Length: 495
Image (tube, rainbow, N blue to C red):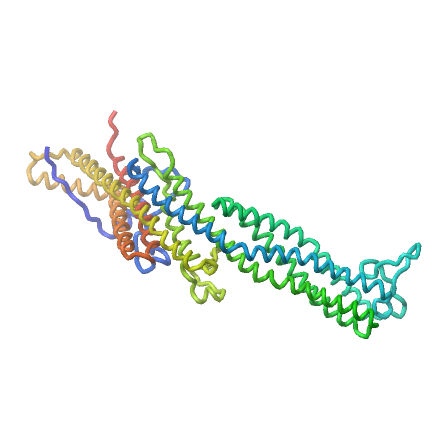
C-alpha cells in the first residue's frame, strides 16, 4: 500500500543535543588554513580502530585512482633523483678533499714542531730544558716530559702548557679526518650508483649517514682550525728574536699552521649547502614513503564482496602530504620565519622550510604534481558521498516504515487518525538521534564535497584546501554511514 513520508527539520538547540549525545560531528573552525570558514569538522576514528561502517570501492573505480596516485609517486621520485644527481656531487667532493687534506696539513704541523725541537733545547722559553733519560736519548719536549728549573716563571709554564695542548689538539684532531673522508667518499660512490640506477629508496637510505659524516668532518675541521689560529699566535710569539736557522723553522711552522685554517674554511659553506640539499632529499624521501602507502592501499586485495576497502587515513595522508609539499618546499616562508622567528601557528613544529635548496624548476614541478592527488581524492570523495547518502536515505525509509507499521498506518485510516500517526512518526523520527546524526553527517559530507569543488576550480594554489575538504567529505560519510546503521537498531530482529 502507498504510504505518505514525512521529513523533519530539528531545531538548533535539539541538534546541539544530538551532537553531544551521538558524537558524530562538532562545530569548529577548520584550522589555521580554513579559519575564515566555520565548517562542521568530522570526528575522526582512531587510526587503528575497526570501522563499524566502511566505504566500498568498486573494482572498476580503483584503477583510475591508483593511476593518479602512481603518477604523483613517480613524479616525486623523478624530482628526488634529479636533486640527488645534480646538487650533491660538488659539495661532497669538497668535504672529502678537506678531510683528506686536513690530515696531511696537521701532519706537517707535527713535523715542523719536531724540527724546531731538534734545534732548540729550551724551545725559546726561559726555564724550560729537555729531560735527559738513560743512554743520553733526548726526550721530545712537546709531547714528553719537561723539567722546570727553580728560576722558571709562571707565565712561561702557562705558555708552554698551552702551546703543547694546542699542538696536540691540532695534530691529533686532524689524524681522524682521513678516515671520515674515506667513509664519506665510499658513501659518495654508493650515492652515485643509486642515482644512476634510479634507486630512490637507496638514496633515501644513504642520506642520513652522509649528513652525519659530513657534519663530523666539518666539526673536526672547525675545531682544528680554531686551535690552529690560537697556535699560530703562540708560534709567532715564540719565534721572536730567534737565530736565523730557528727563524726559518718558526716561519715554516707558522706557514703550515695557517694552512690548517685555510683547508678548514671550505667545509662550512660546503656542509651548509650539502645539509640543505640532503635535508631537502630527506623530506622528499619521507613524503615519497607516505605517497607509497597510498598506492599500497589501492593495490591491496579486494574484500570478500569483490570491493576494495582502503584505510580512512589515506585521505588524511594525501591532504597532509600536499600541505607538507606546499609549506616545506613550494611556498617561501614569511619574512619573520626567514629571520628565525615562528608564529603561534608554527610553534613546536619540527619541520623546517627546505625549499630554498630546490631550484625553481623543481618547485614548479612539485606544484604541478599536486593535481594528481586532487583528482584521485575527488573520485574517492564522490564515491563516499554518493554511496553513503544512498545508505542514509535507505535507513531513513526503513526506520520510517517501521514507525508507520508500529502505529498501524494504512491508507484506509481517517484523516484525523492519519494526522495523529504522522505526528507520532515524525516525533519518533526526530527522537531517533542516530538517524538525525546520520542525516546531519550526510548533509555535511555533501557540503564538504561542494566546498572541495569550489576550491578545485580555482586551480593552482588551492590544492591543499580542496584535499582538506575531500578528506572531510570522506570522514563525514563514515560518520553518516555508522550512524545510519545504528539508527535501524530500533527495529526488532526477525527470528
